[in-house]
Image (spheres, helix red, strand yellow):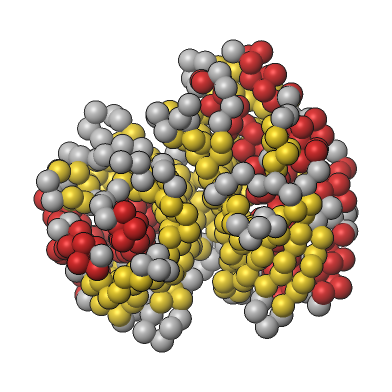
Length: 132
Length: 132
Length: 132
Length: 132
C-alpha cells in the first residue's frame, strides 16, 4: 500500500511544488507519516523561518487524505478540515495521520504535526467522503 | 487601510508563489475580498482543473488574516481554522472575509469562497490572537 | 412545514426538559428561528444568570437540525458540530439557523445565536447526514 | 486536585440536572474521565434510548473544562468547541479529556467519548481562555 499512497501524493500537481514526503504507512494502525522540510517560500512572514499557517492546514489535509488512501486504495474528497495551531513551526515537520473512523459514507482522520524536537506545532481533524 | 493590507499580503513569502490579489477593503463592514485565479500547479488532481483543498484552506486563512489586519493595522497569529468544502472549485475564486468579533485577545472571522458563477465553493471560520 | 418542524422538536425527549420554542420557519430562505429563555438550571456557574456553554452548543445542534427538517420533512443524524462563543449569554436567546448546503449525503447549516439586545453570543456550524 | 474538580462540576447548576460523575483526575497526564449514564430525558428521539447530540456536545465541554480546572485549580471560559459524532451513543458513556496545550491565554483539550463496550461514539476538541 505504501507505493499506492506515495504515487497518489506524487501525482497531485500542488504537491509537486510543496513536496511532501511520505515516510511510512502503517496499515495495522491505519496511520501514515508525512514529512515537510521548511524552505523560504513556505514562510508566513518575511523575517522568520516559520511555516505559513496555510501550509500547515494544507499539510493536515494531505496527511489526512493519505491515511484514507492507505485504507481504500483510492483518493477521496475532503468534506471539512479543522486545525489548531499550538506554536510557530519551523525546520522539518512531520504530520502523523490516523484514521478515527472509516464508514461507508464518511471517514474521519486525526492529524498531529510535530517539529524535529518532537514538539507538537499543530493538531487537526478532517472528514472525507468515502462512498465509491 | 487598503495599502497596509495589500502590503502585508505582498510581503508574505508564501503569497509570492500563491499570488492572492486583494480586491477590496470595506472598513465599515470589517470585510475584505481576495481573489485567486486557478493555475495548473494549484490543482488537487492531475486530470482536473480544480483547486487542491489545501489551497482553499490556505486562502481562508489568508482572507481571514487580512480582515483582521484591516482592523488592527498589523499582522496577528492564527489560532485555529475550520473549512467546509461545498463543491469542486475551479476558475477564479473570491474569498470574502468578515470580522465577527474583535476582542482584546481574540478575533473571529467568517470567510466565504465563491467561484465566478457566484456559487459558494467553501465556507470557513478562523480565530486569531489579537493581543499586542 | 412549520407544524412538522414544531412536532419534531416537541417529540424529542431532551427538548421536553430544555423547552426550545420554534418561532418561525422561512422555507424560501431555508432558515428557522428557535428561542430559549434562561432559567436557573441552565446556568454554567452558581452565581451568574448565564447559559452553560453546553446548553448553547445543544441549541446550535437543535436549530441546525430543525433547519434541515424544514427542508426534508424528516429528522437526520448530526455528523459534526462547531461553536464559537463570543460573549456570556443571558436572558432569552434566539438561534437563527440557515441551510448553507443540502446535498444527497450531507447538509451544512450556519447558526447564529443572539441575545435580546441583538448581540451575537455564539456562532455555530453543523453538518448532517441527509441520505434517506 | 480531585476534590477541586469534583466540586467545580457539582457547583454548576446545569450539572445538577445532567449529573455527570467525575471518575478520575490524572495530574501527570493532564487528563480527567467523566461518566454519564443514559436516562430517558437525555434522548434525542422518542423511540430510541440514545443520547441527544446536544448532550454529547455538552459533555465534551464539561470534560474539557474539567481537564483545565485540574491544571489551573479554577474555572475558565470556553472559547470554541467541536464535536464529531461517530455512532449512536447509548448506555453509560465516558468522556476522557486530555490537555493538549496550556498557555497563558489559551488552553486546548482533546476529548474522546466511549460507550461501555469501549467503542468511541464521539471525539471533540475545545479551546478555553486561560488568562487569569
